[in-house]
Image 1 (cartoon, rainbow, N blue to C red):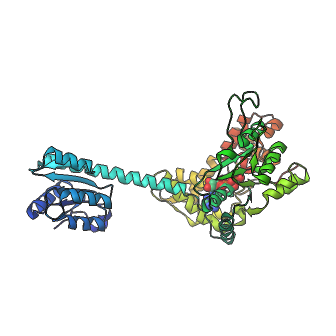
Image 2: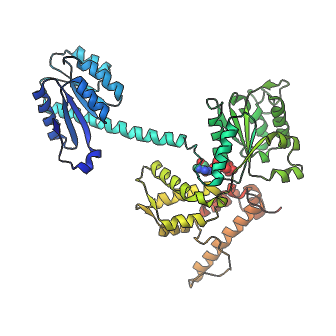
Image 3: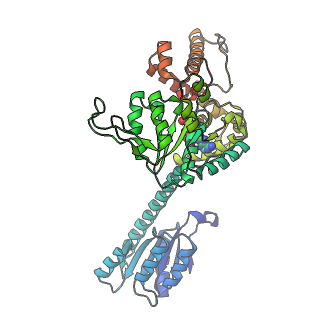
Amino acid sequence: MNNRSATSPTNRDSLVDIVIVDDEQDFARGLARLVSGRFPEARVEAALSGAEALRLLAARKVQLMITDLRMPEMNGMQLLTEALKLDPDLSMVVLSAYGTIETAVEALHAGAYDFLTKPIEPEQLFRVVAKGLERSRLLTENNRLRQILSQQDSQGELVGEGPAMRTLRQAIGAVAQSDYTVLIRGESGTGKELAARLIHRLGGRADNPFLVVNCPAIPENLLESELFGHVRGAFTGADKAHQGLFAAAHTGTLHLDEIGDISPAVQTKLLRFLQNGEIRPVGSNESQSVDVRVIASTNRDLEASLRDNAFREDLYYRLNVLTLTLPALRERPEDIPLLAGHFLRRSCEEMGLAGKEMDAEVLQWLTARPWPGNVRELQSFIRRLAVFCTGERLDMALVRRVLEGSGQTDRPHRPVHGRPTRPMAYKEAKAEVVHAFTQDYVRNLLTLTRGNVSEAARISGLSRVALQKILARMGEQAATFRSQKGAP
Ligand SMILES: Nc1ncnc2c1ncn2[C@@H]1O[C@H](COP(=O)(O)OP(=O)(O)OP(=O)(O)O)[C@@H](O)[C@H]1O
């Protein structure tokens, strides 16, 4: 019997499935009719044996199964066990005419969701079915969220199908098979950390720790003890011994991000580790061996640092065993549509929104932009578009709104002429010019200081906080400027 509800076939995916299992045909059909009358959104089927119920279950997603306990061949308890093996999320309700409360409790222990006793009282039946369907809806929602999270975990994928990305993926695969030190080079936001994670994940250390240290983010005098640890009393305030990141990454991988920024003292210690696999905690006379693969990355011109004696040559050669260079996004514009689509899908999933589409014009515009902040900048721009898009399509009007909101324009470069762009009130005109001047000034200053906000604050006489606020209004990050060429 197939008690379809009135829902049209095109809506079948939104139907919920309920199966009623009883060897008494009339009873099973009667119950199915009763449930289907009350729950028109459900497709209710009767199965006359445990085997038939399992076949239905194997063929499609069933939300709720109501089964009699006493049946020939496979009884209700056996069906319960087998059904939950096939689908642990299934809401199983057992029915018993003869059972005592013990049988019901036994069924609950075996994983049944609820039980009902014969003769069935319709209101009680409807309550149990409604609760079971709600449970099933929540489990489905949970699974959806879990899936999104696991996709985020495996965000590992380096998106891009152009020749540069293909070559890079091959190189990553090859490098992952070895255990040598790797140096990843590339401008800020090109995916160096992503590449480092991928090397770790594809290599023999995948099940062991992967730790990342952003070297410039840790004050210079603390970096040494953060990396190598310290003994108690090593310096003022060291009232406890501290295990460093090298020890914590033992058997795994340590990603040293922005290696070009480390002090000479840390360079020396790092070199010692790369030469003999030993570290010495600050304040200790004893070295200890650790098994760590180092993946270093930098957006700096290390060769220039060598010439300026800011970076040790011997360390440079130790690090430079295997080098990967990540291309800037403007060098591989062919990947922009794919990346944009990928980030749009992910943003919509993260915000629980239905999928959105991008107008061809928007894709063209995105592809023509220079993206000085590389993939990171593209990613945050697409996120902003997704947040502000109220409909299903991302069009150029939305792009312009989002740009205006962050004080940018859709023209790639806007020269400041010191005069307003259209007839307007004095106050408004002045605000526009000041706004444009501030943006150009801050961009210029950060380019010159290579993204160093403290130095930019010192030169400009603005506070760091004020500078950060201006940057936030511009939708920029200081890191974006680290890789750009500037004087000196
Ligand atoms: N090819 C890519 N595919 C998908 N996402 C990417 C890709 N490249 C970069 N991303 C994303 O862009 C963001 C920036 O990447 P990542 O942090 O790896 O860059 P980076 O080069 O290490 O930057 P920085 O030098 O500033 O530390 C991350 O969210 C990352 O997931």
